[in-house]
Image 1 (tube, rainbow, N blue to C red):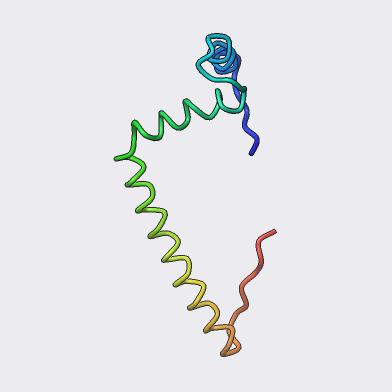
Image 2: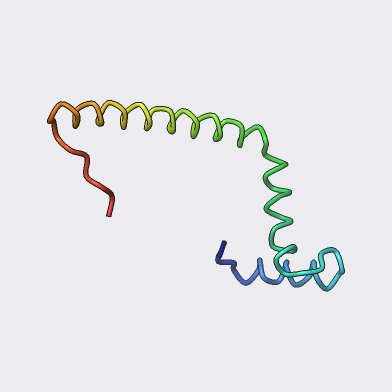
Length: 80
């Protein structure tokens, strides 16, 4: 995975390494993400529930579209 960090984020990563709180840049960058996720678990639970429902509805829509194709109806276009 690649991500873009701003100057202040890069300073924070460097400080975590310099203070020997984290040993590598990748670990120093991942640690605040993990801490932020853990601190907001209630919000993430809502997001996970919503994403799960989106996936369920998408599968349901795809199944319905496949049923139309089987009957000679309009075909689904692939994403570019």
